[in-house]
Structure formats: C-alpha cells, structure tokens
Length: 449
Image (spheres, rainbow, N blue to C red):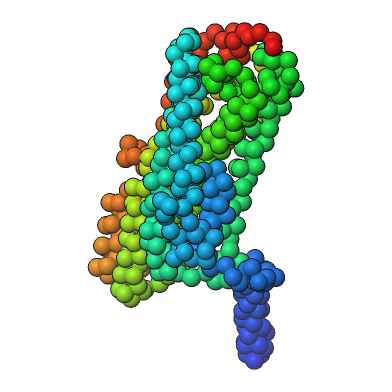
C-alpha cells in the first residue's frame, strides 16, 4: 500500500500549514490596516489655526447665531463673542436690554391695532391669523428675555458638564458639532429670507387687489393694514410697520432654530457618552468605570431638566403656533391661486413650514433617542463584568423619561410626530366642511388714491 505524500514528507506538511497560517494572518493584518487607513482618512484634515482654536463647547457653537438674534431684538446677553461662558453677562443697563424692551412695547401696540381691526371684521379662522401670530411672537419674545437673564448660569452648568465628557479624538471631530449647528441655523435663516422675498415679489409685481396706485406703497399699506385702518397713509409709517413685520417674521423662525440648536447640543452630549460606552461595554470593566458613567449620565439628565425649565414655554408656543399655521395653510391650499407667483410663494412657504416643524421635532426628539441608547448597550455587558453599579445604572435608565417638554404638557419624542399628524388631519377635515373659496384670497375693497 502506498503511503500519502504528506505522511512520507512531514516537513512539507508543516511548511504548508505554516504558509496557510501566514496567509490567513496576512489577510487579517491587511484588513486591519485598511480599516485604520480609512479611519485616518475620515478623521484627518489639513489643520488651520481656526481648527486648533476651537474648544468644541456649545457656547462657541451658538455664539454666531445669538449675535444674529440680537440684531432682531432677541436674547439681550452681553459677551456672547467671548471665548468662554465666563464672559457672559445680563445687565438691565445695557442697550441690548432696552432694545428688546422697545421691541416688546412696539409688538404690544401692533397687537392692539390688530385686535381692533379684527373686531370690526367677520370673525373666522382666517381673520384671527394676525392675532395668533402677534400673540405667539410677543409671548416668545418675553420668554427669550427671561431666558437671557438665566443664560449665563445655564452656560456655566453646561460648561461644567462638558468638561466631564469623554474628549474628542481629533480637531476635526471637535469642530464638527459647531459646524453642524451653524450650518442648520444659517440654512434655515436663508430659507426664511427667501420665503420673505418671494412674498414681496408676489405682492408687489402681482398685486391682484391694489390699495394704492404705486405698487410699493400698496405693498406697505397691505403689510400694515391694521395701522392704516386708524391713521391715514404715510410712507414713514408704512416703512415702520414693515420693519416691525420683518422683526416678527424673524422671531417666528428663530424660535424653531433656537430649539433645534438646543436639541443638537444636548443630544451630542449623550452621544459622546454613548460612544464611550460602545467601546468599553463588551469587556469587563471595573466598578469605578460604571460609577463614572452613571454619575456623568445623571449630570447630563439634570442639565436637560434645567434647560427644560428655562425653554419649555418657548417649546409650547413653537409647537402650538406651527400646528395652527399648518392647518391654516393646508386649508388655503384648496383654493385657486390668483397668479403663478402667488402659487410659487404659497407652496414654498407651506413646504418650508412643514419641513421646519418636522426638523424641530426630530432634532429635539433626538435627546430622547440618545438617552435610550445606554439601556440597549447594558445588555451587552458580559457576566463577569456585572457589578451592583451596573444594576443601579440600568434601573435608572429604565425608569427615566429624558426629553424636553412643552411646559410639562407633552414630551417631545418621535411618537409626537404621529400625534401631531393625526391632529392636523382631524382639524383639517373639520375646517374643510366650513370652507369658502372666495374668502381665502380676497382682500377688502379699497379706493385707489
């Protein structure tokens, strides 16, 4: 009987096994090398002085957006351009404070004229639109003034929690949250400006019901109709009313932008903790690690609750006003548009309102999404890594409901999206029953001057 070749040459068999082992180890090594190079390519970028000056704080990220808000009489806090929260200060002697107070007074006067105008017209869901708009912005502006008083202390607490978080691995990662917040904010501000310009174009160049012979004067008259129902027309009063209208329009958009910034900032805190847990959870860790993780999580939750106490009123106004105007715009969408320019403006405005409302809900509900991730990661802890501190941490995660609220009336989670959609559909069916096409786009007859 002939013996197998490998049995006759054992050294050749051992050599073949060594070659196969080297090949398998080489493939594993090349796979790890490729993964490391991909990671390096994703995280490395050409460094600039600005990259290294970034500290990755929330104060640094929101400073440019707060500076824009102050141009429109909101958030009168001094020192927003400082490198840290220590430069923040609220003072009733600053021009920012009195600028905001003057805006509140002018909005209150404008609201009084709007109420008078509605009182002398037919009362329906469309005629009360100016009152709802003015009241929501007036209350929100007052809430922002109160928040400005709390902002330095809130940022001090925020910075204290940020210092305890796991650090970033590179400068690019440290700068990413600020870039994301500023990109979203200025994108929405640009879209809001585009919407406003489309509204001007549709009225000035396609005025289907002119109030005066000059198209600009007719536009100013329509923008401040509540003023000219009492006073005779004058250009200076028309421009004053237009400035007031511009401030109100920005204030309405800024409510949503501000809530998105808070949602991104707080969810990023929880995401940094979750990234640390993902790296360590599958290996036995000392009890001190779980104590650190639990106390850090509790610090973030306490900060979220402090932020909620400060902004829950703004949250309620934002969601309530968005819901009202979505119902009203959907009701108007049934009507025939007077011109193609009006149609372009109207549907752009409707899509912008729907997108902005959905974005607020998704960015703010991300806090609740990130807060539930640690409980899922707890299931991956190995048996030998279970400590009493792990059980305590898991119990807290299971019992906590971490989310921003609308004045404690509702929690902002993803489930709220379906609830709001159902509410819009219900009220829309009710409003359609009382719909009259001729009222939505008609304007009051006025003589040409």
